[in-house]
Amino acid sequence: MRVETIEPDDGDGAKRSPIAAVGGVHGDEPCGVRAIDRFLETDLRDRIRRPVKLIVANEAALAAGDRFLESDLNRSFPGDPNGDAHEERLAHDLLREIEDCFTLGFHATVSDDRPFGTLADPTPRKARVMRALPLDHAADFTGVVEGRSVTLPGFVNVEAGYQGSDAAADNAFDCLVAFLRATDALPGDVTPSPTGHFRVRETIEKPPGRSYRVHVENFERVPAGTTYATVDDRELRAAEPFRPVLLSADGHDTLLGYAADRVGQL
Image (cartoon, rainbow, N blue to C red; front, side, top):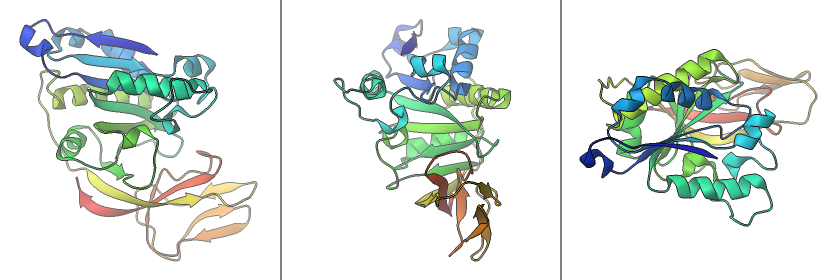
């Protein structure tokens, strides 16, 4: 794990609580790492006015180009310092590093090129920060998942776009700068925008099959009776209306994605 800590020059700024940004939780999602490295190469780092930690989490998985080495880091929290798996120990170390921080994490998908946010247990601060990021949608996973970064206190995520794409790295950088401004770590205007609040209600399991296809768009309403996916030659129809989140034929071994409801704006 690589941690780049930026301390402000003035004494008052140094006394403020730190914030953090984390990239490279998955080794096949380099967008957050690229955003962090790009930020460190700009003169913006010299304008930081509160302590900031920029963290590259799973360096070994990034070097291998794999999602993880032994277990999924994003399903390993709170971790175990004596765990058998590399990611179990890393989850413990990462959690200790950010325990006093409000934190933004970066991910990428194979389901959507549009950046969107993820969070759980929304607080006014989480909602305010999400509105300050250049995102149209935020998926709320409260009560649906556990052991993931999105469920940690003071933690929000950005799904920046397609894995490995230049666009995802650019989106991650834009979100990093907006996050630093929204948390008063960086001077500059913050322009809040409406962010749709999509509450995830359940997982959509992947039925056994050889070939999967998805026929609907993420975040767009799927009416009851609509064929939203096919498995081999079998149609999967919506039993009731829903909004797909992270719906993809290739994104996960056992999940097609999630079903959500739009509940308004954050």
